[in-house]
Length: 100
Ligand code: SF4
Image (cartoon, rainbow, N blue to C red; front, side):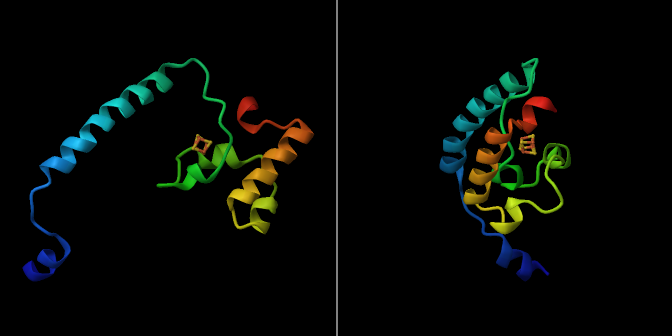
């Protein structure tokens, strides 16, 4: 078991990497708190960011306007699919996030 753990984990110092990342964490936290304090949600449409790096807990709510089969199925959720969805939304006057 210890051998297996040692295979997965590699011991070593990573102070420099942590130091480098810690500065960006502070900036990100301030950005997040600023967003949380807003009285209205950000005007952002659904996209690949909803599942990257993990599935957002609001996924079902934000994506519920989509029909069972949509352009995202045709394009397997690629950038092209979201571009088409954005164009269709604009033409039809549908702005999912603004009305939720
Ligand atoms: S599911 Fe909604 S709240 Fe979550 S990342 Fe996507 S658009 Fe933003």
